[in-house]
Amino acid sequence: MRALADASLVAGVGIPGDRYAERRGTYSARHHIDRQVTLIEAETLEALARDHGVPLAPHEHRRNLTTRGVALNHLVGRYFRVGECLLYGGRLNVPCRYLEDLLGRKVFKPLINRSGLNARVVVGGRLRVGDRIAPAEVAEIDPALRAANESHALEPPPEVW
Image (cartoon, rainbow, N blue to C red; front, side, top):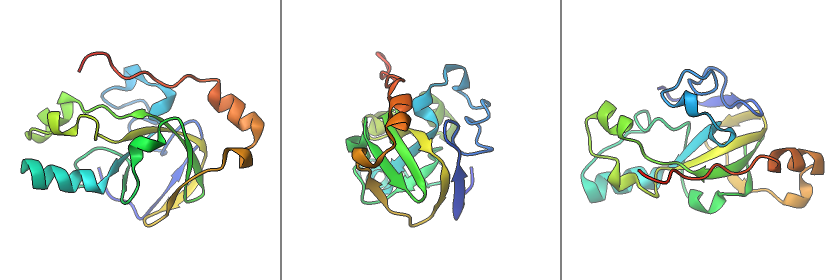
């Protein structure tokens, strides 16, 4: 994991070279369109340290984008823009015991319902640190593009954690 000042996203894929874009990640066997890019709130990382005494640096959380000032939970089932890209909020990310084991820190329970957002890359392009995240007006999105995206059902959350 490493921080980037900018990155390219590819529609239908994610970030070129990313372990999940190349299907080499731990959960790649359970790949779903909703997991092309993952986002997590910086405020969650701050709360984890403040309220639970568990520091989790941006390079440790294993999400692709760290955001600030955006309620990611509100973007499930919605289109939004980041830089040149158009994303679609798939489902809330679910914390996993693998991250807890990897870090040797108790992060699983504190991250339930705050583990970030899984998203689809509908339109690729470049994004940079500091790019604003903004809701996209559905009427401004090509109807064929919307129909193709919306033909895929949202991934249901796991029934048991």
